[in-house]
Length: 180
Image (cartoon, rainbow, N blue to C red):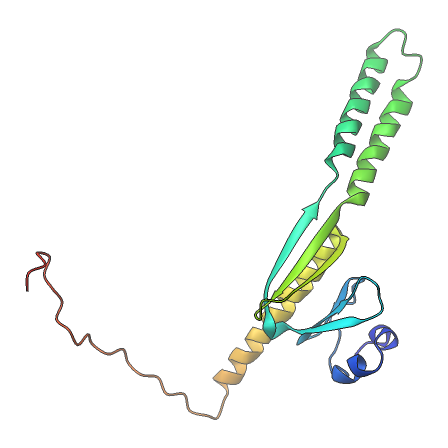
């Protein structure tokens, strides 16, 4: 486990996953090779979710489109001030205000991440879009790695695998007329 995670996780959480390596630290959660450690909103406790029990991940992006609408209006005012004979230099401050509103739009976008477990339980967290996308990417990489490890174990297993050939149908197939 990384030093960053070991400092934050204490007690039973650290003991339960002490041999796990954190793949990539994230402000929202940590992902190890077999577990997802979710930091709850109040930052007072953590939830450990085995990646094998994770049934799905929903990512809902929440943009504030009002900021884009206001920025578009400010850009129209800036264009009108630039084209006007009586603009008196108002175009530049309006354009800067529009640019600030667009930067504010990108800075305030949020993402809700919902982790669905195979038991039907859900865990939800809120973060920025960039953090959420990075977290989902690391989780998918860890899940792929776990599946590949499972396939490697089956391939190199010393236990024989018995495969049965498909059996022929025991009932005769009816003709196209449907008569017996």
